[in-house]
Length: 329
Image 1 (cartoon, rainbow, N blue to C red):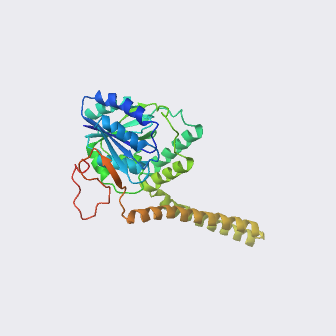
Image 2: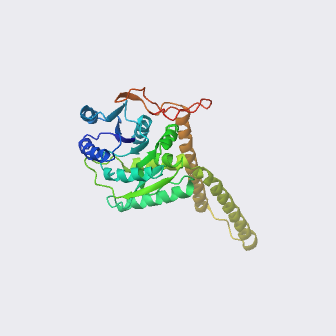
Image 3: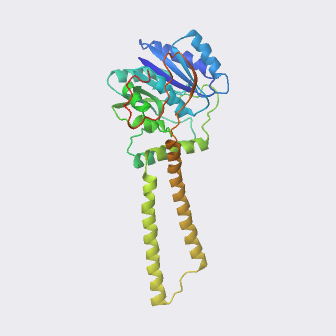
């Protein structure tokens, strides 16, 4: 009935506490459940601890990826292997409170197709990170046609029909917040305050957050490309107006045209705009390059608790029949 999908990369310090906190909450639902752990090429003893935990509880399933593919791809691998009618992605560091799961399941039983966990406060983050996050999601709402809920991450409940749609989305740039929102369906929210990380340190550096933000923007919006049409028009209009002013000053007032300094400023300014434009085009071209290669999204090295062959999220050929709803099960 309920599948928990938990990507794990070097989470050895958190796994015991995570399983201990999650098991009684799931037992209280009174429904069959499973936890699908995805070991994303961990370098510590994550896989060994997962195998030891599975030896005592067969409801724990393990998917071991051949290398580190990144959290969003690991999450996609877990969704491809989850069997439940309701699927809940969650982090292993216990920042997402397991106690919220019964409330999510209750809303799902009442008719919601997706129940999103929304953070009420981000007090554990710095002022700069909170401010930039707020600005980023404000920009995303204006530049995309996908409704992305602010202060919401991957922690949410997904009905099986949404999971089936997500499993058919083969793109390599996995901005999961947008991918989850894209199918639509009836959505509700539950609020929570994120807990302190159980153990270890966050691996989200400024550079990773920056790349994550660009993936979201370029994967779900073409506005940055279209913007340069208007910037080019404004630049041309400004140059024409400046030409008229210069001619009037020269013909009627005898004022000499501005010299070397102003010319250099204009050239450098327009050159910077051109390089920035080329950079944005390069971001889109790089994503096209990754997509057209058509490689599998992830590679499963081994798995425990599954009898069926591994599900690889490879692109669906245009002429192929759509996969059945129970492909991932």
